[in-house]
Length: 351
Image (spheres, rainbow, N blue to C red):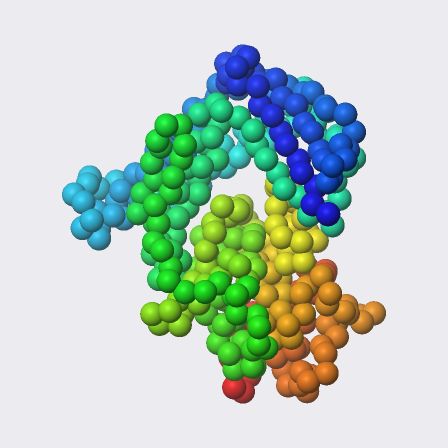
C-alpha cells in the first residue's frame, strides 16, 4: 500500500529571512503513522541568491542556444557549462546544509523511522510560498530547455506562471506509452531495437552528467510518425558530480541525494538516495525484461547468484538474456557501469 508523506511549509509565518516552521504527517491508507512532527527550516537568504544565480546562468545559455537556431534574436553569451555546474553545485550544497540543519532533524528522524526503501511513496510538498514553488518547478523547465537538442526528448517551448500556478509548454508526442503496449510479448529484435535507441538517449544525458532516475514503460512513448522511442518526464532528473564520470568503480563515494524512483524499476542504491549512471541502466533493463517476458519487475524471479530466471519460451541460449541480467544485478558493481558497455555487447548480438 502507498504511504502518503506530506511536508507542510508554514509560509504565513515564515520566509527565507526568518525561516520556515514545518510539519510532517505520514499516512498509510486510513491510518496515521505516528503523530504530526514539527520542525523548522532556519533562515537562509543565501539559498535564494544561489538559486537566482543558477537560474540566470541557465537562461543565458538557453538564450544562446535559441539564438543559434534563429528562434528569436538574442544576445550571445559567454556562460559556459562548467560555470553553470559550479552554480548548481553551490545551490545543492546550500540546500543539503539547510535540510541537514539541527532544527529540521525531527523531520528526518521520523522519515527514517517510518519509511523503508521497499515502500511505494507519494510525497506532497505543501506550500503556497511562490519562491519555493519556483525553485522546484523551474528546475525541470530549464533541464528540458537544455536537453531538447536530442530528437527523442520532447521539445520544450516555454514555461509561465498564471494566478500562482506554473505551467510547462512542451511538444505533444503523438503515440502510445509502453505501458499501453504490453498486451503482447515483444520479440527479441524489437527489444534490441528499443534498447539501442534508449541507450543512445541515455548516453546523451550521461555525457552531461545527468541521470533520469525514472526509466519505466509509462515514461517512454513510441512516436506514431516514425516509430521512434521518446523518453519523457524529466521531473526526477539529477545532475551528478563530474568526478563520478571518471571513476568506473565504487572507490568514488556517491553523495546522498533525495530518494526518488518507481519501486521495481529503481535499483536499491537509488532508493537509498545514491543513484549513479547505472541506476538508469537498471531501470531500462527492467523495462526491457517486462516487454520481453510480460513479467512485472516485482514478480521477477532470480537464482541464488542473482541471475534473472527467464520463463519458458524465452531462449536463454542466446546472449540477450545475459545482457539483460547484467543490466539488472542488485549489486551495482556487478552491473554494467556505463551505457557504452551495454551498447558494445548489444551490437555483437544477432537480430
